[in-house]
Each structure stands twice: as structure tokens, then as C-alpha cells.
Length: 312
Image 1 (cartoon, rainbow, N blue to C red):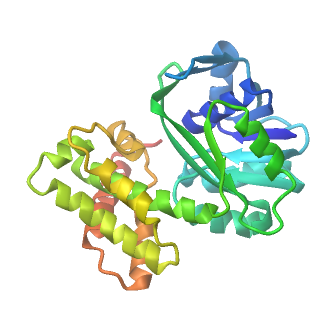
Image 2 (cartoon, helix red, strand yellow):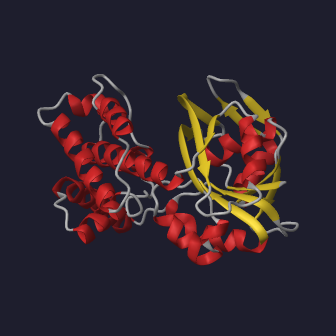
């Protein structure tokens, strides 16, 4: 089974390195600058579980990919999805499958339209990582969870082999029979977390220390829950309670990666996460004043970036 990971940044690099250590035949498709760094320093992961330093197999967008791959793992940002599709199309064979680990759910429609729904698995990655200036992947906590699943019947012949390989890693891995529901559960959580921390430019603990911080967070979560329910994906009550507990933990320094993108002046996935949730709420006729406020804040940030001529 030949596996290609699109990107060797935080998510792709972390899970790809774990797969490599477990004996997987894995190649990374990266941009030339990242390839140069990896050829010089190797792929390095710093984690509380264990540090990794490997010499990865690489191809770049400027090279012949060397044939087709069986499993293509997409770990790009949502705003890079269209260019990612162009990069992976030459290596998608008749029996290949794509495993997207993107945030949100809107990318499924894009991938289905390009490759067909039977060739697109669902995936949920729960991981907090950052990329250091030297290219090292830093694991920020003790969560490294990965859930995958088929979205059609019968499932791809590659589902069992990739699941067996992932089970051999140290990652907290599982196969779900309801992967789209799992993706929606994360969508609800991430929209709330990003909406709150990006609007307030603060972590959860700091927001909760303000006069209306908890009401803002809980209100965002309730709006997202209503949208998911209207779209046919009501959150699991136990999971929703766990999310609420995590999002209202006093003293927590938890933030969304989207806030870290803002702090470095970079592009964000606002349109693909908060914006998509707002669009679905509007179609469903649900009152979502807090989500609209959060999205407006992020739109204003992006307009300011454009005015200043900032790029990714």
C-alpha cells in the first residue's frame, strides 16, 4: 500500500511521521522550500509521547510523482484545497482513495465532485501542533486522536489496510461507522472555539474571566448545535456536554489554531469554518447573531490583510 501525504506541516507531518515509524510506505508531497528543509534537517517531531526524527521520502510539485498512490492523505488548509486537488489528481488511480483531514465539512462536496464520493473517506484529526521557524513540528498537548471511516457502501478495499497500519501507531486511532456525524461534532466544537477565541483575541480562560465571556461561548455553542441539528447531524448529547465542559474550564489556556494564524498575520480558514456555519444557519432560517458577529470580525481581519498587502 503506497501512501502519499499532501503536505508535511503540522498535521500531515505529525501523522505521517507516526505512520513511517509504524512501517508504512509513505511519501510526502511538499513545496520546494519545505523539501529543501526536510532534506537538510529531516522530519522532526517534538512530542510528550516521544520525539521523532526521520528521513522522509519526498516529491515536490515540480517533480514527476512516480506513479499512482493507493491512499492520499490531505492535510492542507482549506483555503489551499483547490491547488491541492491539482497536485494530487495525477496520482489518483482508479482504485485510489483520498483521506482528507481538513477542518469543517464543506471540503467533502469539493472532493466528491472531483473524484466521486466512493473515493473519499471521512476523517477527524484532533491534534494541537505548531511548526517552529526551523521546521520542527511541536506537539502542544497530549491529544493526538485520529478517526476515519467510509462514507459509502461497500467501503474501499484500502480502508482495512490503512486502519490496520494506523492501529499500529501510537496515535489514539479508531474507525467510525458514522464518520460524517463525527466530522459534524468537531465542526460544532471548532466553530465555537474559533469563533470565541478569535473574536476576543484571547484564550478560553481569559474569555471566561470577562463579564459576558461564558455567555458568549455558550451562546455560540448553542447556535452551532441548532445548525447541526437542522442539517440532519444533531450532536451526540454526551459529546456536546464534554465540549461545553472543555469550553468553560476556568483558567484554561486553550485557543483555536485560527487565533495563532491571526497572531502571525496569516490567512485563516474563517470562510470554510465560521463562514460555512453561518451560510448553513442562514439557509436553515436560524437566528445566529453571535456567529455572524464572529464571522464579521474575521472578515474585517482579512480585509485589513488585503489592504496591507499581506500574504500567507
